Image (cartoon, rainbow, N blue to C red; front, top):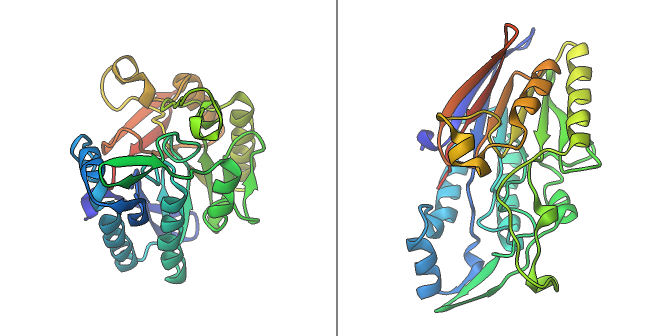
Length: 293
């Protein structure tokens, strides 16, 4: 089970070692969305590298494992649900509530699958039909206790936030998704439109760097989580799989580095890898975690 998430140790100034678990791309499908077993869910499962039908069972096992590890913090770097289904989000919140009760703080960030997704479906025998998905405001409400509550500072241009879950450690959740450009026939649009590539808005970049600079000026350590890759994790990733690395990645990582962010946790490509970039003797590290399913 440890192979599908990362346990990272951080040395906080005057605080000793802190264990953090990082999980990505659980793609949880609520069992309530399978109203009848049949070809619809079987075809979905068989045509996908992800273990969709087992996602709830896997999440249950992961929660038990995290409880055993007892980290100070759990980070989930997006694609929380299969396709942004409201029922799947609600089920994930129930799992996170269990961890909260066990004294484990959790922070999430959305992935490209999680908001305004036209592929949110019920599986009913041989057929599928539309299931309710969530918008940005509803996402914030659902995850109020997991990054979007009153103790966090929220970006007004995106679902990015900054908080201090552990004294001396500021975590910045970076929203790199394009859900604002999604279109859903189920909500009256003329066609379904979905984007899995990522970008961070210029105004959000400015907000993030301000948050990081403020934290660093106070002597605090800063880490970030984002769904899309900040660095290439194999040669020419930006050429072969451009949708998996955030737009304007070179400029973004230089700005984050200059603001004092040296570690970013990502997901999206379903691979586990660590990449590092250097600039004027300084460095920034992108730790990608593979999919939980």
